[in-house]
Image (cartoon, rainbow, N blue to C red; front, side, top):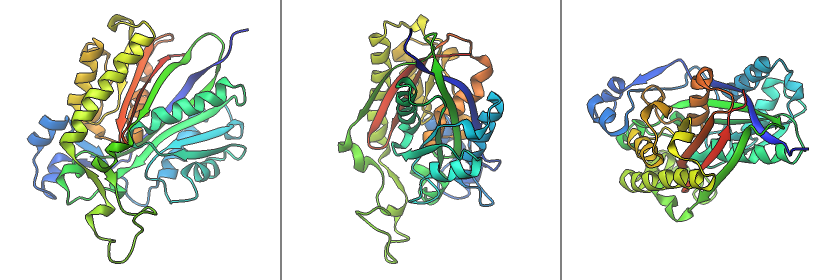
Length: 328
């Protein structure tokens, strides 16, 4: 009997209704639409309002995935959430999402890997399916970056948006699903992309509560240089490891951080632009949300057996790639 692989059997995405355009940002910081588009590819991003929380978005994802599969939330075994902006320090977003969505028989946890959060959660969820321990695992990538970005810092506020996406993993005996992955970290780059204050090293005090270190800091040039090399390298590496050439890959699903990084990755893989999922112009960088939001938007174009490469790079540094075969 074949060993089970962890196949994606349903996907859903959630983005807030409120649009924050480049023109809006021109009124807030010293920037302009042409500059933002030429350097990042971003035209607008979505921002939460009216008390919408990360657990609200995650709960909607669980409910919609169950609806699509014709199952009850009570059948979900586990919910893993990749995020750096959970509702609270604790309890976990997973904890609250299970409650709000009615997934009362599930357990789970949050995983922190910044922009690599979704691929880390996907590979983690894969282990619970392949081991035979569980039959239905939902993995979510979600972030409300507007909660930790300073709208006085033009280096970061132009990049990030809010959004969430998730997939259901189930066992597959026909060879579809997650085939391989390469995940990496390099903590020596931690100070180049960081939210410094608010953790146990630098707790919140009344003296530092308005300090810039309470928000995301990014040393743009260094991060770009590291990302453009490593995201391309790890994507080429997983192709070589699985004897894939450009013509064998149907889709690249890259983390949506910067259009130039996406282009460099596609070029390194030998892929034409038509094979690359890009929605950065609409949503910006939603951190853990980017890859599942792409899969959700492209779902109808995907065909059973499609070879898909996911690639991400994030703070930490964290980065990696996943090779999967689409199951439906």
